[in-house]
Image (cartoon, rainbow, N blue to C red; front, side, top):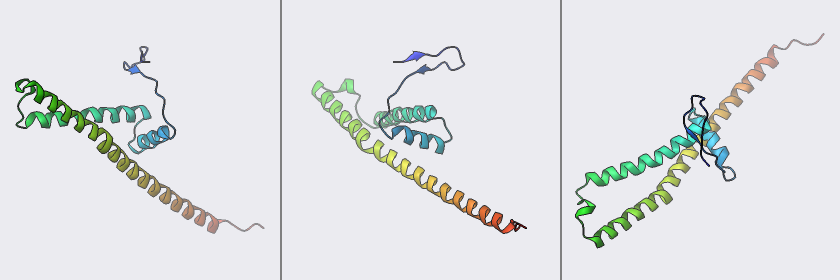
Length: 136
């Protein structure tokens, strides 16, 4: 249930979500990779889905398609079905593929950072072991 926040400088609605197992950790990693809070990451991803749909609508509007109000009723229904199919295909195919690609890139970056950190630690430990003075 959405609730209005108190006057804390955050005038946005609050909304409680339940995440499936593992989703919270994916969001956390994505947020860290994008230098955002988890909340900002969730909001950005939601906004991008609306922007994608708006872009698709703008492309359709810019094409030479007759406006729906000029079409006979049966053609309006066919057009609506096609738009619904496109939206469904977009939601089922493109968005998950894009999310998987982003997650893969995040994982690769994480692995690079872990390897770099391991190298730094090994170098530091090696140098520290060389500078230790023998006990008398």
